[in-house]
Length: 318
Image (cartoon, rainbow, N blue to C red):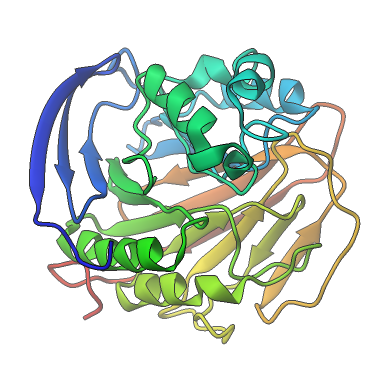
């Protein structure tokens, strides 16, 4: 698990159509029509594409967040882990996730959280999504990448042990070097920065640094059940608009919200822990526009926009 395997290429068919897949070091890189009818869902007149994202999903309120996604009509849906409570078992996915968020299986790109691993090897997670034609990366790894419009998306697994995570970081570096897209977003469960109950996860600093080394633009996490927006920053928490990642915590997908707070080393700009909701990104070739969409009956919202960092021909910093 400490060495990177050679690049390999596979082609298969899924419910979405023909998909070309290139694996870098055991991960997956996917290029596919992300909307089942191949049409313009999630794309506006300017060519921007809409992506929805949230973590910590089907607890008790994912019946409230699912209608937000339907209304957005996104080209892709990302999950930041802890998709089916309490243990990510087959029955949790069947009884809690499938009735509400399961309707988005043709556009979903999930990542696992720690609750998935309450079932050995996150078996319920891999079985459910793989059984529904959803790419989740290889079992035992769970990281992969794909493209949406002009953006390169990277789903990481923040639950891996030391040797497996070393391989993941090596894969991440190679994957970002190979990307030709002008903009990059990454997502996983445990946040590098958080002002919530669990607080900063310093073990994710090395992943964060690889992303800033390659001039990535946005990262989204869950784990803490609140919404939070950070200013662009480096892995040590220093604000840096020219080189830093803008991080969001969107742990508001449907599990009970947390009231406890903590102090983060990250440059927090907005914190809110009383509203379920879903993040909406409208992504163009030059940047993003973000809005936090609250569930019906709630009024809190937040919005921000940003420009993608210039990148070299291999995706690395110039």
